[in-house]
Image 1 (cartoon, each protein chain N blue to C red):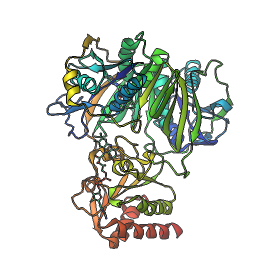
Image 2 (image 1 turned 60 degrees about the vertical axis):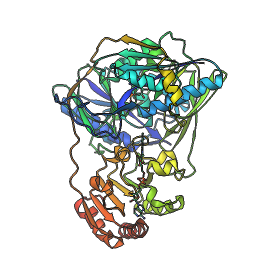
Image 3 (image 1 turned 135 degrees about the horizontal axis):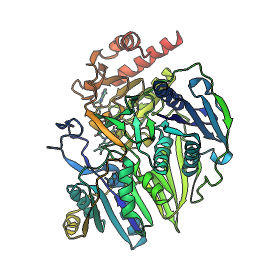
Image 4 (image 1 turned 135 degrees about the vertical axis):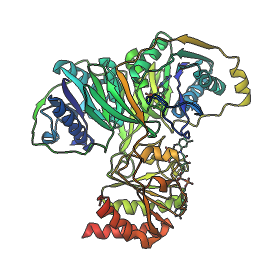
Length: 250
Length: 322
Ligand SMILES: Cc1cc2nc3c(=O)[nH]c(=O)nc-3n(C[C@H](O)[C@H](O)[C@H](O)COP(=O)(O)OP(=O)(O)OC[C@H]3O[C@@H](n4cnc5c(N)ncnc54)[C@H](O)[C@@H]3O)c2cc1C
Ligand SMILES: Nc1ncnc2c1ncn2[C@@H]1O[C@H](COP(=O)(O)O)[C@@H](O)[C@H]1O
């Protein structure tokens, strides 16, 4: 089974976000970067499927700066076989631009399955995987939290408001991984050592701003200073009063 | 700017509230730029009363095969409408359906997607705001392309009725709309037909402070007292198996923007805040005065949730009865 996983280097959620000097991007100084958490589910699923099939290949592909090599090494340490860095100094804010670059790399690769995370926790677009599927003309299911594959066919489940959609599809296909799909493994020391020797190809990608320009990146307006209305059940009337007369939500 | 096409959703023959928000947002933008708003509603029946929420014309596609969301077919219908109607902008809700459909449409039309938008206006071009980095920062982006797809975050744009009652026209799906390689075959309903956290006007969420799954009964009672509330949960209790994943609020769960969010026994970890910080009013009930949730809450009650929640439920019931 030949599987591609697209992965992104993103700031760890714990990091404090500071706005850079130009007011259009974050200040990366001191920011810890990690493999996007949803992409961990995608990598894990790829490894599990390859292990189950008994043979095959898992390729990890990232678009980003040189620093994303570290992210690819993380996927290699988990067990992916090879990595590709599509090197781009300034990735676009238009998800279609990212999708096009990834689709160009994936096209003709002979993959049975192409996996993505449901969403990147930096840009919150939740778009790139589904766009790649459309660009490649492949069936796709997004936000998959349960998957079964057999004989070139699959059944995927995705949570929707008030239920779970069950989607049947044929391979090759594109899936984006949601929490619940699996429990991602931690890279073992052996894996980390092995990852250093695995192939990682670097290919430059031409910069393309896409159809979106950044006017400003700012911190969200601070919430109005809150207050503790009181202690214990005796404070409930004060809370009700505030909700009714001040906040006017009751 | 050209006219706007709003994509609406229905469930069990009823237009979803988020679609009224989509129409309101689209109408506001159209009024600002002197253009019109048409809407498309896809589903088993053509129906749904939405004439007075600002659409000039509503196109309905009623087809039993489209009762469940079929990504490829829905995208084909919207794209066909876009092309034949000369629209410049598609607006839909950033729901689970919209999050799947929007990128399909954008890729097929080769136009940018602005996802999960919380504000939009026209200033020498379309300008939108969207939260990023788990809600810790906000982008203002300008669309430089001649057309685009926008999904708007649910519960952000308050539905406003307008006097306009749109005309309704039934249309059919393009013949090659369906993709035989994939099919949504059914929806597994949850055991309880509960309101989804991402749609509810009031969310009552519980965390590890509730101590055991049985205590969530207390929160269900509080939610029931409100009438329009859903129960949410922190990841800690979802991972522990106390609550289903569909109720999880946060970075790896759902993003909610209700008018009232009540966090009960939740510490307020950054990943939890990522999912609820855009709620209009936040209430925290926690026994630890240093819990980070109090930093973001508008109102807090310090103390034992097991004593406070029943009293709150009682008071809400009393108000609603009067
Ligand atoms: C990659 C990643 C993604 C994550 N995604 C999410 C996510 O989507 N959503 C999410 O919620 N978390 C997420 N987390 C987990 C998050 O970091 C926290 O661990 C989690 O939110 C804590 O849940 P909690 O507040 O219920 O529990 P705790 O942090 O244990 O807090 C329990 C609170 O209950 C209070 N309490 C206890 N007893 C009482 C009582 N009797 N009366 C009143 N108060 C009481 C305590 O004072 C405490 O503040 C994620 C973590 C990571 C690393
Ligand atoms: N720069 C990138 N390189 C590789 N994969 C990416 C990149 N950006 C997004 N993806 C993939 O697309 C998914 C969804 O991202 P997004 O649409 O940006 O939320 C991510 O979880 C990744 O799997």
